[in-house]
Length: 442
Picture (cartoon, helix red, strand yellow):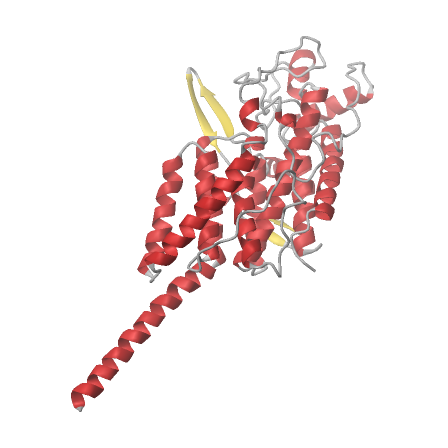
C-alpha cells in the first residue's frame, strides 16, 4: 500500500514538473521581449553591415510584414489583412499543422527573412539557434518547433517572393549619379567624397503611397549667392549656426546624427564609426513606446509594422525629391564662396540636400506612433546610450520629430527650407499611411 502511495506521489511530482516546463516555454513565447530582442539583433547587424538609411528601412520592413501577417492569421478578430492595403501584397498561406505555435512562427519568419537581406548571416543564425535552444530547455516540444519553423519558412518564402518584385535587385545594376558641373547641383563632399547613395531609390515600389512622387514638396529656393537673396540668407544661417553653436545645440545635433558611417582621418590613417541609421533611431523609439505601453506580443509587432511602413515610404518619398532637385549641400557652397576652412559639426551625408531625410521620416514615424499611443506620450529616449550619448526626454513623438528635424541645421548639413519642407512632406506621408493602412479592427 505504501509503495502505491509513493508511486502516486512521484507521478504527481513528475506531472507537476512537466506542467511547469510547458508553462515556461509557453510564457516565453508570449513574451514581447522575444520579438523586441529579435528586432534589436536585426538593428545590430544593420549597423555592423553599414546599410544606408533607405536600404536599412527595407531591411526592417520585410521581416516585420511577415511577422504581422502571421499575427493576423493568429488573431483575425483583432487585425486586418494587409492584402488590398499594401501594394502588390497577397495574403500568406494559412497554417495546416495544428502543432504550429504562431508566435514562434512569427519569430522564425522574421529572422529567416532578416538573414536574406543582410550580409552577416551568421550573426542572426547564432541568435536564432540560441532562441530555439533556450526554448527547448524550457520544455518546447520538438513537434511544435518543427511545425512552427516549417510554417515560418513557408511564410518567409511567400514574403521574399513579393520582395523580389520591388525593383531593388534591378536598381543594383543602374548607373551611378553623374556629377553636374553647374554650381547649384550636388557634389560629393569631404572628407571621403563618396558617390551619391541610391540615386534610383524612387524606382523602388512603395507600400501605401501610390508612387514615389505622390507628395512632392515645393521646389527649393533658386540658387542665388547675391547678398540678401532668400537663398543666400539661408546659406548664411547655416554658416552662422555652425560657427557659434552653443553646447545645447551641439548635444541635439549629436544625438540625432544617426550617420551609419562616419569616417575619421588622422594623417594617413582612416577609421570609421558605425551607428544606427535615422530609421534605426525610430525603431528604438518604437521599442521604448511599446514597452512603456505594456504592449503584448502581437501589439508590439503591430506597432513595428506601422512604423516600418512609415519609414520605408518616407524614405522613398524623400529620395524622390533629393535626386530630382539635386540641390547642393551648404558645406560645398560655404567652402567655395565664404570660408574654405569651415567644417560642419556633423559629417555631411553623401546625397543631395533637399529635402531633409531626418525631417521627412521622423515626422512620418511620429504621426504613426501618435496614432497608436496618443498625442501626449512622454518618453525618455535611451536609444543612443550604447553610442555614448545621454538620454533625452520628449513630451511627445511629434516633439521628438521636431528636434530631429532642427538638429540638421545645428549640425551644419541642411538649409532651413529642407527642414521645414521635409516636415511638411513627412506629415503628408504619415497622415496618408495612417488613413490608408488600417491594421487594427475597430
